[in-house]
Length: 481
Image (cartoon, rainbow, N blue to C red; front, side, top):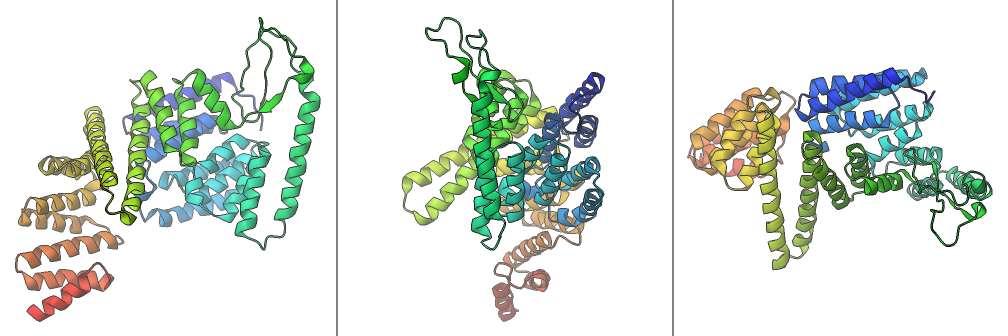
C-alpha cells in the first residue's frame, strides 16, 4: 500500500480525529466512534488514529475487560463471520473495518486482534500489526496461534530476537510442532545476515564529524546513526559509527524523554508498559504528560484509569500475600492505606467527570461504589439513583441501591430496589437473577417471612443448586415451616 498520503486527506482525517477525541472526553461515545472511525477510514494504516479509536472503545468499558458483558461473545459471532468472508476474499481494508465493528463490542477480543494484525501485515503496516497484538497480549496468554502470529509480526518489523523468543515459547507449549525448529534456524540466520549487512553499510550513510545531534526516527525499525558533535576531541570515522535498530518502545522512550508533553507518544508508550504489566511505569509516563497538559480531559481520564488500575492490581497482590501471611500487621496496614488512597482518588476523579457531564451515568455509578467503600452510604445512594436513569446502568444501580438500604437497615426500601431490578433484567442474565432472589430471600428470612424466603431460594436453586449456601438455607427453612 502506498505510503504517500494526500495532504488534504490527512488534514481532514486529523480534524475527524481531534473531534472524536473531544467527543470521547465528554463521553459522547457514539459520536466519538463515528469521528475516529472516519479518521481511520481516511488513512487506514495510521497507527495514531487507530490508537485513538481503540482508547475510546476501551474507555467506554472503563479500561476493564471484565465490564464488556457476557452477551458480547454472542453478539460478536455475526461480525466475526463478516471478518472471515472479507479475509477469504483478500479484502484487507474491509477486514479491518469489520474488526473495528467487533472492537465496539469487545476491544480486548484476541481473535479479532489477530485478524486485524494479519490484515495490517497484508497492507504492509507491520507497526500497526505489532501494536494490535501487544494490546491484547495479557488476554492471549499462552494461545499458541497468537504467539506464532506475534513471531511473524516481529519478523516483519525486523525484531529477530523477539520473533525467536516467541517461537521458543511455541516450542515449549507445543512440542509436536515439527516446523518450529527450522523456523528458528531461519530467523537466526536472518538475524546474523542483518547484523552483517548493518556493519557493511553503516559507513555509507553518515558523514564523519557532521554537526548534527543523534536522532531517532518515529518509524519502527529505522536505523539510528550517532554522529560526532562539534567540539569533541576525537572525531569518529564513518567506518566505526554503529548502526542501531531501535525497537518501537525504545523510540517512544527517547521521544518521551525529549518531550514528555507529547500526548500521543505518552499514550502509546503507556500502552506498551501496560501490555508488559509495568503499570508503575505507565503511571509515571502519563503523570508526567498530564502535568504538561492539565486541561486535556481525555488524557486525564486515561491517566486516572491507569492509576486506579495500578492501585487495584497492587491490592490484589497484597491480598494474595496476606492470605498466606495473615499475621503480617505491616502488610495489613499498608493494604488499608492503599485502599484509602484509591478510594479518595476515585471519589475526586468521578466527581470531576460528573461536573463535566451530569448525565455521565458510568461515573455516577463508580462514584457510588467509591462512596460505599468510604462509608458514605447516604451519598452513595444519591449517586446510584442518578445512574439508574440510564438504561445500561439501571439494573446494576438498582442492585447497589438495595445493598445500601440493607446497610442502613431500610429493609422495605431494599426489597423495593431489588424487585425493581428484577423487573428490568434481561432473560439471559441468570447471574443477576440469582443474586437478587438470594438477597430478597435473606431479607424475607430476617423479617420472619419464611414462606416468601423459600420461594426466592427456590428460584435460585432452580438455576443453580450450588449457589452460595442456598441448599442449606432451603433445608433449614423446611425444618422451620
